[in-house]
Structure formats: C-alpha cells, structure tokens
Length: 547
Ligand code: NAP
Image 1 (cartoon, rainbow, N blue to C red):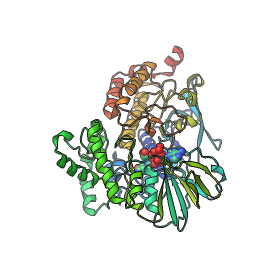
Image 2 (image 1 turned 135 degrees about the vertical axis):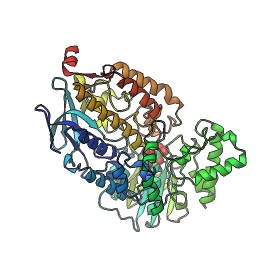
Image 3 (image 1 turned 180 degrees about the vertical axis):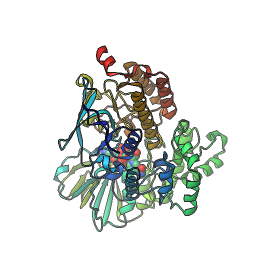
Image 4 (image 1 turned 90 degrees about the vertical axis):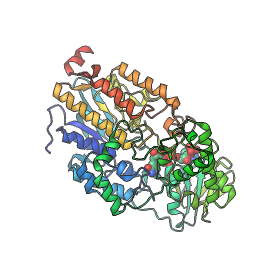
C-alpha cells in the first residue's frame, strides 16, 4: 500500500518495535487505511523472540493461544510443531506473519529510537533514531515490550571477566557452543531454568547460582499431532472467541477447576494436585482450586506437595532442600514451567550454588568468587531478568507536553491510563506497557489494547479529532483502581518483578493491571460511550485554544 501523508508529517502512524505487539499494531493501522511505518531496534523482526535466542528458549503459553487469533486464514496457514514452541519456530512464525500481511516494506530494522518529542503546535511527534533518522508522525504506538531491557547484576569486577558472558535477553546470533565448557548460570527464573536442562549434557560443568528458589513445575510439552492440528483448525471460531473474550481473565483455553479446595477431602486434594502437576504450563495456576491464590492454608498444602516432588526427583537431599522455596507461596512470583529442571541436578556436571549461604564476593578474569571459594568459567550466562514494565519507555527520550520527561515523571512509578496511554503524552500509545497486562497470557491483553487504539484512531479520523490525551481525571481514576486492587494481587511486593523488586533502586509499585480484562473493558466502554471520549479526544483548534 502506498503511504499517504499530509504535508507536515511523514507518516500518520509510527509504530516502534516489531515484536508480537508491534507487528499487530502495524497490520491493524495499515488495514484501517492509515499510512504507517515501524522502527525496530533489532536487525530482524520478533522483539523478545528475536533477542531471547538462548538454548531452549520457548513459549510457556500454548503456541496457538500466544499467536494471533484475529485471522482465520493465518491461523489455518501456520502449523505449530509443538504445544509450546521453541524460539526458532516462533521467530519463523513472526516472519511468516509479516510476509503474510505484506508488512515487511513498512518496517525499518536496525533503527533504535532514542528520542520522541511532542510538538503541540503541529500535533505531531518527532521521533529520532540512534542512526539519526527523523520521522514526524501524528500518532505513535510504542510497542517496545515490558521485558525488553536486560537487568544485569551489580557485581564487583564484572568487567574483568575474560571469558564469554551473555544475557539471555541479548543473546548473540552466532550460536554459543557449550560443548565441554565450564558454565555459570546466574538466575533461576523462567530463563535460567530453561537453559540448564538444555546444556547440562553438553558442558564439562554447569553451576546454577540461585539467589532464591522458585516453584518450578513441569511444562508438560508435546508435539502437535495431525489430529490435534485438525482439531485446532476445526475449532478456530470457538478458540478465538474464548481467548478473545473480556470475560476470560487469563487469556488461556485452560478449563477452570470449577471448585474450591473445601469441596475435596485430603486424599482427593492430593489426587487433584497430581493432576495439576501433570497439566500443561500455566494450567497449574489457571486450573487450580479457585482459592489456591487466596487461601494460605491450601496454598501451603500445595507447596508441600511440590516440595515432596522436588525431594522425590533430586537425588542429593541437600540440593533438593536448597531448591525448595521457603519464602513465598506458589504463584507469589511468576513460576517457571520447564521440562527436566530438577532432573538436571542429578547430572554430575550440574551444581547448585545457593547464594543465601555463599554470596558472590566478586567476578574476576577467570571466574566467580563466592564466600565458599573460587570457581573458573569459560562462559557466564546472566539469566537475571529485565527492567519490567517501564524499562524501555523511560530510556527512549520521550518528552510530552511542556517537555514532560517520562524518565523523571515516572521515577516514583508509572502513572498512566489503561496501561497504554498517559496524560500529557498526547497521541502516544504504549500497549504492553506498565499496568497493561493482568496476570495472564500477555498477547491477549495487548490485542485488546491495539484493537481499542486502532478503533480510536478510526473514530478520530471519522469525526475530525486529531488529538487523544486521557484527562487528568481519567488517569487518576484508573490509577486509583490499580492502587485499590493491587494489594489483593497474589504477586508479593518483596519478591516479584511485577513490583519492580528485581531491579536495584527501582521504586516498588505494582506494574500489572489487577482489575484484569473485565475492568479494562468496563473503563474503556464508559469512555467511548461519548463522542469525544469524555474529553480525551479533541480537535487541534480546541486544544490550542484551551491551552
Ligand atoms: P526473572 O524471572 O526476573 O528471574 C531473574 C532471576 O535472576 C531470578 O532467579 C533472580 O533471583 C535472579 N537474579 C536477579 N538479580 C540477581 C543478582 N543480582 N544476583 C543473583 N541472582 C539474581 O527473569 P527471567 O527468567 O528472564 O524471566 C523474566 C520474565 O520473562 C518471566 O517472568 C516471563 O514473563 C518471561 N519469560 C518467559 C518465558 C517463556 O515464556 N517461556 C521464558 C523466559 C522468560 P531472585 O528470584 O532472588 O530475584
């Protein structure tokens, strides 16, 4: 499609980021007839699935529930190989989507955005990349991801290490050869837990540095058989409706348990936990007893069941005890779902270093020194997570009305509306940003947001509006909802990156939408019930005369 532009702007819609969310945003904008372009920092599309190419990086949401569900044709044309696809398959899929919708010509890769400045007089953003390219756009959709800025530990002497060192979120394109190597993995979240089993049979030694244990449970993956694939195709409408429903808070297909723990006897509960242990991925949360995350006693009982699983799998009893969390309940941190994690510790090549007992003193040129001694490494893997939610947005040089600088404005935590826009940032959307997702399947939340944003741009065009800015009252009301419901969340402030707790010096604020999809839709529906979205939409003339 040829780009149609007005004289004062280069493009109507500028999307930043070509990950899962950005690809969808670009496709919807073009489909709605806007001129649109994407700037992507990486040299290829895929976003986190471009950068996180470490061994065995894979979905832990079912492939067909994480992928796009807005196009039957796309759903039917792509055949997933596994229930939980690996990174290479996901990257192939996202490239396939880009070509299927003919988007590639609108995407400029290798263009990292370093500044975005709002110009009130022109009702336009000026966006500049590291390479000096400048684009003026009426609307900006920053799909820069919640987990895109790697978090490195602050360790003495890190820069002295002479071996290879990689963060899982910035993995090199040239495959890393682990054969016969001495490897340290720092971190045991979903990324660290996925790498260990993938390399344990290759390495000379692998030491997993664990700050605090997590409740890791089996992924229970499998190949998608022809029969399963036929079922998926035959049931597309039903699947898409279920995943896309605002009444589905998790964004998964998993069936809820349909009961509270009190409905079962002790023996029945143990049998139920066994079934949950054998269920796929997130079903351990979504199909568990209704009161699993609200009733401390039942959660403790499930934790004891899980602890006994660890004890039965890991042969060395000391290692087993070290792997069992003592400081948080199941679900209080985002749990990893991984195949053969605990089994890996039975391989003589693997050791667990519990940092609670022997903290790291320093890194030096040949390895890592803890209070327990010095160990030499060829490779150190940082599986230490990301600056969640706000990381990318506060580093992008975003300046709104009167030079409002997002990096300082959000120092005490993000203030926004709907988890995708903010007062004083007109015409700027950040789907997938802080307060964007609930505790479920991220792409389903961001699809809701993109659909709403696209609908808003179309509505604005049809009714002569050129400016969208949530009012101070709308933002305040949204933030009050976040603050009121947040303490009821299962994610605890002391441990979870959902509170920014994993980044040193970061303010602890809840970064998800605790009201879930239902609350988001309720608030957005209230807003769109009026032609001007209760004052959030304006024409340029109105907004200039009002200022
Ligand atoms: P993460 O869950 O934040 O885990 C980081 C790990 O590094 C934790 O074990 C943490 O310990 C440890 N750590 C952090 N700083 C440290 C330090 N200074 N010294 C020692 N250890 C330190 O990060 P992640 O594993 O990359 O996962 C992040 C998110 O990415 C996940 O929640 C998930 O949403 C997504 N993800 C998804 C998949 C998938 O879909 N399959 C795979 C990977 C990641 P503490 O626990 O003590 O803080």
